Image (cartoon, rainbow, N blue to C red; front, side):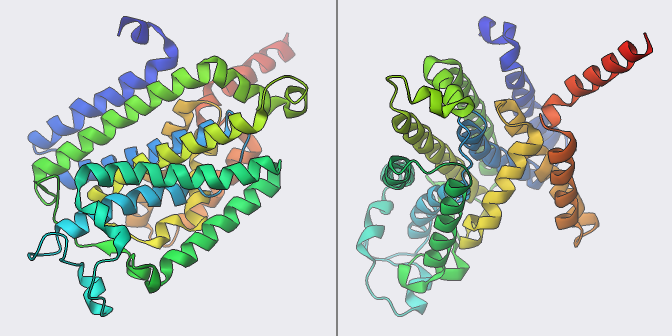
Length: 359
């Protein structure tokens, strides 16, 4: 713990740890509502996914436009368990969700069966996105697709999966998605105590993911990722198998996003295909770019900042958000190449130049 506190690269842990104390205390004092706490819990879930994207884009130079897909796959996994848990009484394993009844489905599809069990639901919600990313990434990286071509094909993947999940034939709720959850692991999702627990778990997991990601990017593995980002052609002349490193970080980012999705769904109460479309993945890219890519705490800061502003503008000026986020992205690209996290250094550099010019 002392080494963490002495290391400035972990200063964000202290900032995040304050949320573990301040918001719950504010709720106990009646200053902060439980809905506000739940809202910040969802922000933390987004930040978890953003860390994975930053490892992929900021440290490896791979612009992935399907991170929201993996986020949703994790969310659908836990949502299936909660929906089965809320499907009413009847023979165990035989009750089916309401939307299946409306679609005249009389028997639970086979791929829903494992999600009756909470541990299996958690396991599958992590393994399925990881396996999917591994299979998809294997063929993509083997073909040496990179740059704009990789971005386009991942965008096409997000669009294709969005269309698949929209269809009722997939038996995943179609356009309406999955909702009407009652409990998770025996906890009533409408209870204030459950919302506080989910908030605390989201914050703790975010801190844990940040620490793990920081250790990974500071390791030899992380240094190779940065080398691939800076000069992939030079690394190809060494003995390193670039595609193995790219595939590994792609799968890791997918698993991290799935974890964020699993924590997000119980707090928001619904998961739909709209959360996995191309626009959702582009928003994640904006979070990382605005915060400062290649700096994990920048991904967290950008996510929290953008989503906080979203909550404000959609309440005060409902139709203005697309303009606001567009302006933020343009300003970031033109003037904040290091994002908000690098703004103090840019200001310091600017005044240093002005001072030198006067001398």
